[in-house]
Image 1 (tube, rainbow, N blue to C red):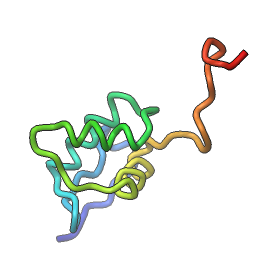
Image 2 (cartoon, one colour):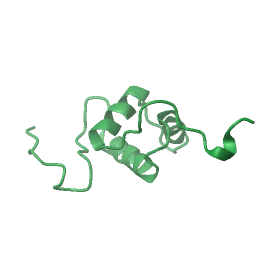
Image 3 (cartoon, rainbow, N blue to C red):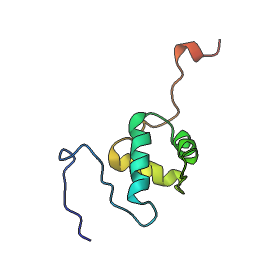
Length: 88
């Protein structure tokens, strides 16, 4: 099926076409989890998805690729500590 060309400013929703391994409903669930907190680490996203009534088989690599495609990727490196969490 031919996908229509779109620009990032056309729609606020991401491209949710079903892929070979991740379906549209799974991508919708991922979009919801990632858009709620874009700074959440991918491993916590995996845990949140595992706790849903219908767990999906998605890998860390899938999540990171979708994050980049949707513009919800985190910055590089380890998250910085807040001043209150620093060791003394």
